[in-house]
Image (cartoon, rainbow, N blue to C red):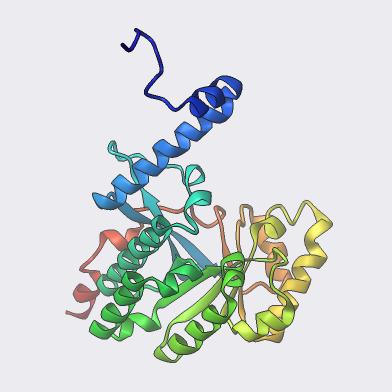
Length: 285
């Protein structure tokens, strides 16, 4: 007979782990809870995009495009911290489901707002995911103008996991009008010949090099070198994580084409243009 307080329903190994390393066990339990909330959010469509502007370096009052960042919400409507699950899902089907949700939301926003250009993040692994590819094909077949305003962002680390597949994907879809950005460039995973072979349209410089660049001189030469490589291959450049006007001035002086960061706007799920779905039709009337 089960005695009061006995833990016979919990595997012995888990009990021993819990007793020997309570902090690790607690973090594991929180992570498991977060993954369960992520699955529920996707199933119940508690998802949205938060849009952050990417401004022109020579005229920061002008927005080149917005990056749509996926947000998953818990039952109360609060965002689920990405740090609690993102590292677990990159190689998992759950990561592909998040990419599908981001693409679907981004294409819907482009269709509703024909004056906007939006960048959507994706993993290289989603190229072979049937639902993600089906969404891309079907939505672009319905409205060919969406491709001209869609930017797909693939991180440097993700691209290097499946480089041949990514290169073939870019060659297939660029003629249809889609632009491609390598995100978080500068980690050292891609060589210069590989970068040339990828042939991305936009290079987004990792924030570790651009953040506080005006005050900290250690990354001046590195950032300048990264920008020189981009210019050599005719790629537009975006500096990520720009948080001050001083940093923006430094980066513009170095030759960055566009700037993204809190200095020009935090990601928001309610940008002005999203709240005015009929303004284009009204302007034409």
